[in-house]
Amino acid sequence: MNKLEQQIVTASVLGTNAFKKGIAPTPCRDGELMAIIKDRFCTETPNGEACTTAILKAWLRAWHLANLCNTYLV
Image (cartoon, rainbow, N blue to C red):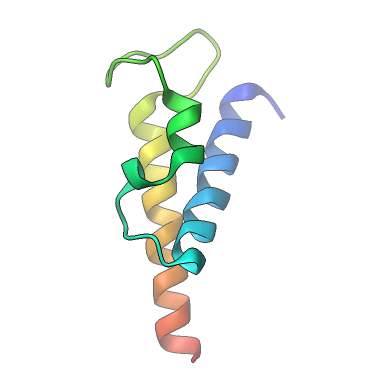
């Protein structure tokens, strides 16, 4: 798995974990996620890495999916 894929998968796992911890669906409240994108501008994409918006979207998608699964499976 290359770094781009790893960052997207990590963001997804962090989003799911954030839901389980009761963190609101606000990526900036997840310190582990912010560590991945620290020192970047919003539109900046370091060579070989996932763009910031893709990382944030992966986190949000996973958070909302966990929320939906929790809502309908409980």
